[in-house]
Image (tube, rainbow, N blue to C red; front, side, top):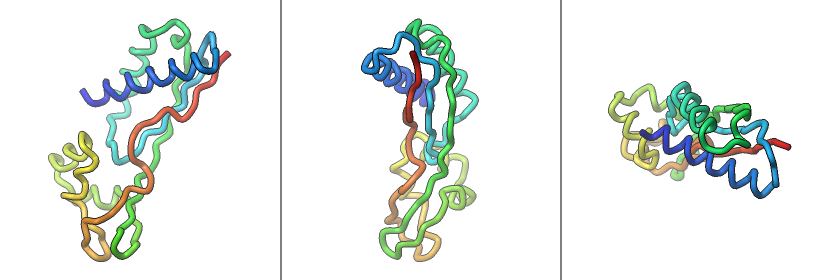
Length: 136
């Protein structure tokens, strides 16, 4: 399960940061989720909370705050920028699912709306990362 692996990664990183910051307790974990990742938010939150409860006592009471980051794509040919949400409307469920698991495959299914080139970069909104942690 993709969301499980991502949640484990967040918890592992939070623990490393807590050790580095010499926290005895983590009170807040701030996570950013890029739109291109197409995470099932409810499932991800549930899994993350489940892992936090069993992973380490210093994480048990941590509040988890999520911020979604809109995905912005930029054509390398013509410089046009557009939102992934615009391109997603034209994708089949199967194609969107493939991009969910392997975001790099987006180049196979998405084209620049201005010049139709598949050569674009994701300038924002890719991945899931630990933005910061707070604690005592």
